[in-house]
Image 1 (cartoon, rainbow, N blue to C red):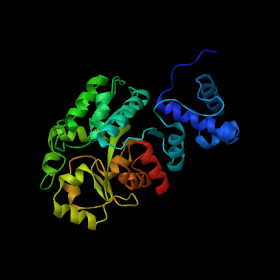
Image 2: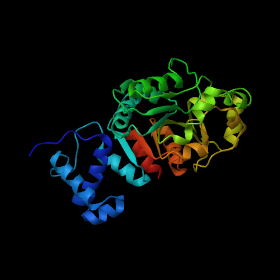
Image 3: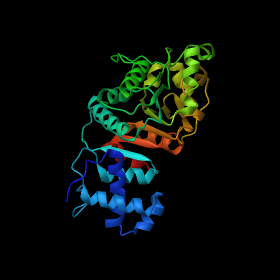
Image 4: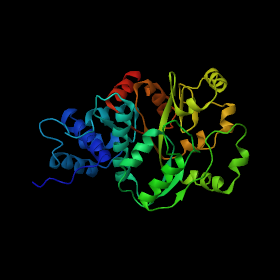
Length: 315
């Protein structure tokens, strides 16, 4: 039997989830179809793919860089649309960013279509994703946050959006403005280029973001604000941030004066995006990811082995 083309990461995880239920859990195709909201014909096709691709032999396994079983466990536990866990024991942040960025680039190449509007937050992991991205459907690309300068990082959110749009061959909606301003952001929000990009937020169908953890602090936003702002936000219960959206430990948005000084997507706008893919590394931020998932601000997750296990343990 001819072996089919290599499965993309999203299709790989879905195929493995179906195969595990059928071959290991003993569920029927109809039960699997009902559980995963698929047609029974789709389930049958996925089972055929699992066999013909070599994913199913005596046991379910995959010799690639994605931990299929752990990805499926994470997806099922948190009802994620896509879940990719990079199989690595690496702990060094730069190396983890490279691995997760590569996985994110492969996923975007697989799932983004020309009908999508792709929104991009800013995080060092997204810069890594950009460096691994080789092809992308001709979609529009929208900047979701202003620029946030970081020591040792030359690329901004503007560079990220411009480069990804160039790879896609689609239009870029970007603006030259900082993410945080000293006073009210109202004047900058009224500028034509800023208003033009923000006007596209409602049309974003897929977004890629990073996660910041505040207990302990592992967030570029946390690093960028004053000690006084940090104390105020800690007292307000901030536990995580997703592209500047401040969340408490239960995933509820936190109202604070800083919100009026941030140029970027707001909580209600982020929550309306059909698919928000978060790139996360460093087990210290597992509870921050849990908060963002609980609040409905993340629908898909790309991470690594230790992070996935910490997130599952956190429940």
